[in-house]
Length: 92
Image 1 (cartoon, rainbow, N blue to C red):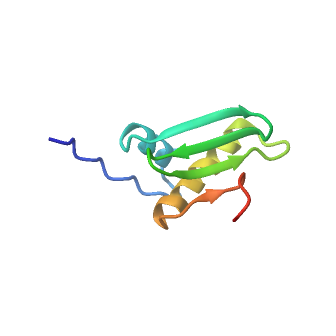
Image 2 (image 1 turned 90 degrees about the horizontal axis):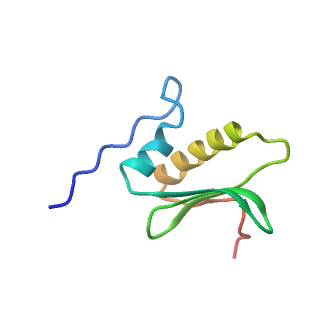
């Protein structure tokens, strides 16, 4: 019998820091890759086992915490709209 999924936490003001990212990895079985990925540089990628949901490229002078916050916000958008947030791959 499959383990029931924990509901995704609410997002927005007053939400725990990186709550959606935490839920995605721990409760939804998502995969996250974070780090240097030549030739694009530093990136943050979220994959749900079937699809890439978020692919962000670190912005100039962006520190790790700001990248993680943007990553969490992008993951909320991707999940809410069943979409992909992609800053790395050009549109086809």
